[in-house]
Amino acid sequence: MSKNKPKSIRQARTQWDGLFWTTMSVFGVFYLALIIAMLVADFQFANWSDMSSLLSDERVRFSIWLSLISCTIAAILSLWVAIPTGFLLARLGSESMTQRLGQRSSGCRRLFNWARYFIDTLLDIPIVLPPLVVGISLLVLFQTPAGRWLDQWTGELFASLGYTGIRGITYEIPAVILAQFTVAAAFAVRTMRNTFEQIDDRPERVALTLGASHYQAFSMVALPQAWRGIVAAFTLAWARSLGEFGPILIFAGTARMKTEVLSTTVYLNFQFGNLRGAVSASLILVTLAIVVLILTRLLTLGGSSKKGVIV
Amino acid sequence: MISVQQLLLRQGDFELSQISFEIPLNSYAILMGATGSGKTTLLESICGLRAISGGKIWIGGDEITRTPPAQRQIGYVPQDSSLFPTMKVHRQIAFGMEVRGFSQAERNQRVEELASSLDITEILDRYPRGLSGGEKQRVALARALSFRPRLLCLDEPLSALDDDTRSNLTRLLKKIQQSESVTVLHITHNVEEGIELGTVHFRLDKGQVRSVGCEDFGDKNTA
Figure 1 (cartoon, chains in turn yellow, green):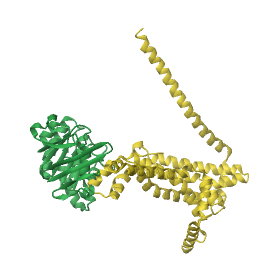
Figure 2 (tube, chains in turn brown, red):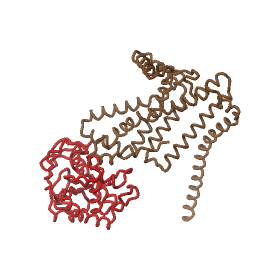
Figure 3 (cartoon, chains in turn purple, cyan):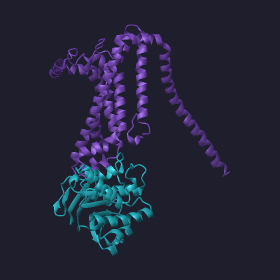
Figure 4 (tube, helix red, strand yellow):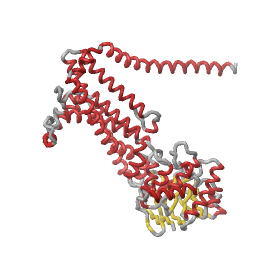
């Protein structure tokens, strides 16, 4: 009896384990099946002749090029903001900073923590706001005196450089990039923050004792460790920009051969009743997104969570 | 003379107050104390990595209490080595000279000299990943010594090593301290290690640092 009891417990445990893994797998497989089914349906709906006729359209080719260029610029700008901001947020919340603040009064410490949480929340706003609201907010911003001045100044700058095609920001190509950047940068900042949080700050502190300035400790010790996170942040910002639609629609419009990007091509085709054209444009978006995701996975292959790989 | 006078450190509920001790130049000082007594905190304060609430620190007549860590001329070897993961050992050792603007030739000469003394010439072209615990500590030691610091702070450098490696490194530490003529402040839990290496001995207990004789060093009641 005493021998049978542990055996029965073991059997029951094995059964429960099996049930647990099966249940978990069912949920995962359900979502995976949904993604695959959507893609298969898209590919079945559109045929090659739809795709080739779409690609032969000069306006569509323009939207593809504008998408590729604007997404790349938006992703570079996002990184430019995300690397320093992510580093600051990660290090200001680090143990070493807490140790330094430990010497200060509790009031000072509380104020610092409030400021940090406030800034952190502000940086998340573009992620949680409905995309249309981001677009409207940008549009309203450029109706203020400062916004109007910047709009005009940008137009003059491009004119002085010989680009008369761009007359400002609003409803022009810079608006496309700014709309993409506004949302994409928030994701990039979050990725870089997580990356730097996962990088131990002790080597940077040792670098200080070796004679390095804070900039040298950042650029020579912390930054090289964050390369996988940087690739991830760039990809995320790029992919996010590629799929951006709401802010572009409001802030940059959908002028063909001017501010039309792939996501707006899908919308315009759908609006004019050309569902096959909309699906074909969607497939170009899907293909680009998959290529970027695969490239990122390959580039960051062998990385672990400790190396700051977020995607 | 390395002199710490009336040092006051506060970290939440933890406090070290009225910490005073002196280490003669070119001596090997050992600091022992129970876990959580604040040894690492004290060492990091001396290195400038923690702000202090009061007191003063001097090295050879220069007050360094408010001096940034980069200008203190203190070499620091943390317990876990904290090597730079993306740098090869050679560049890692030369780091302190590189940021100080030494020429490539000077850096190479110093790295070769230290690598030879610490027996790490074979691993100069490797990254820290994959090095053994003893190798990592020797690299960290070479890195801290590269710019000829006035004080070398070692935070339990031998604690995570096996007996043979520990014994080898103990001999090496003794040799390198004499050849480099550097003052050392070494934290350890190991009494034998402290007796073998130390020329002056301290114990941190109940927030106070007290000098103890070598013969009483292992006795906790001495403090």
